[in-house]
Amino acid sequence: MFTFIHCSLCVLFLMLTLRCVLWPVCRTKSRMSKNSSKVLNLKDKISGNEVDLSLCNLTEVPVRELALFPKATVVDLSCNNITSLPPEFCNLTHLVKVDLSKNQLTCLPDDLGNLSNLQHLDLYNNKLTVLPVSFSQLRSLKWLDLKDNPLEPGLAKAAGDCLDEKQCKQCATKVLQHMRAIQEEVDHAREKRLLKEKEQEKKKEAKQREREAREKEARKREKAEEKERRRKEYNAQMAALAAREQQKKKSEEKKKKNGQATDKKVVVESAPKPRRSFLSLLFKLLLLLLLGLAGVAAACQLTDLRKEAVCAPVNVAVEDGLSWARQQEVVVRQLLQNLSSAAKEFLESTQASKN
Ligand SMILES: *[C@@H]1O[C@H](CO)[C@@H](O)[C@H](O)[C@H]1NC(C)=O
Ligand SMILES: *[C@@H]1O[C@H](CO)[C@@H](O)[C@H](O)[C@H]1NC(C)=O
Ligand SMILES: *[C@@H]1O[C@H](CO)[C@@H](O)[C@H](O)[C@H]1NC(C)=O
Ligand SMILES: *[C@@H]1O[C@H](CO)[C@@H](O)[C@H](O)[C@H]1NC(C)=O
Ligand SMILES: *[C@@H]1O[C@H](CO)[C@@H](O)[C@H](O)[C@H]1NC(C)=O
Image (spheres, rainbow, N blue to C red):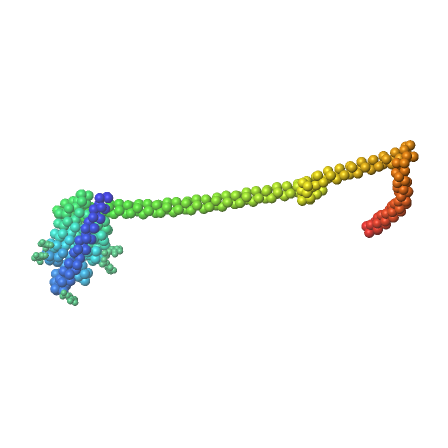
């Protein structure tokens, strides 16, 4: 199968190169032949539905001329120098019987199967190795001669001998069968290839989709992680803030307990300590002095020392102090009275305002 495709490709390539090389030559020749009364000659060569172009030294089939005579369905091109048929030859669908025996054909055009009316095809003594796959579509073909061609073994086996009418008819049938099998294989291979391509395409798409999904998932995860991270950061910040707040509150409470503001506390805690101790010392000294004075006064008043000279000024001072205190008592009592009356008034007024 592969060798067949390979081979046919080779032949096709050869054909194309050959055509490229020969094309200009052939064109000029055919034009020349056309101008040099070849069209007239073709008309001369037509008798009934038959065109006889055998033994004309042709290297190319005069397709355009033949297309002008659609009634000429039988064409004899035997014993020429034709190496290949042009693709346009397959447009001559009116052809029923074609004799191409004793030429130099190495291949036939791909669309040969288009010759749907072709019943009789003589390819005896050419250089063919394979037939185009479309050969299987020659549904009218009933007679075929492929003798004396370097056919590939499979085709040769299908073609058989074709030494008489019956064998040539069998050749047509068998070769058609053979070519149909090849056609099926080719179709199958093509289908398979298409299917494979489709599958590969699908796989590719699936992979692409999968990759996209993965990327999307990754992006989503990244976003979620980022969010989580931010959330944690926020929480940490909040916790720190709360802790700081609490610390502040605590310190404030402490401050309140100490009854002092922070800066005052600082002052109290650092500088005032010696001052306080100094004050208390002073206070203690004063107290001691007072006690001493009280003791002296008491001694001068209550003991026998009263009559001594030393105590005389002391006693005078005490007497003065006591009389002053008695005077002050009256004043204090007056003050207290005033205060109580004022408090009463205040209380009454607040009571009245409440009511
Ligand atoms: C061929 O015939 C065409 C007209 O059909 C003419 O124009 C052309 O000159 C001719 N060429 C030659 C080479 O005679
Ligand atoms: C065919 O062409 C060749 C040269 O290409 C020439 O020698 C030969 O005489 C020609 N024969 C006929 C029948 O025209
Ligand atoms: C085919 O052409 C070759 C040269 O290309 C020539 O030698 C040979 O005689 C030709 N054959 C026929 C049958 O015209
Ligand atoms: C075959 O004939 C059709 C019209 O009948 C034309 O459109 C097409 O180009 C021809 N193909 C070739 C290969 O000459
Ligand atoms: C052969 O037939 C097919 C489909 O009918 C068409 O596309 C193609 O052009 C034909 N080829 C020629 C050379 O006429």
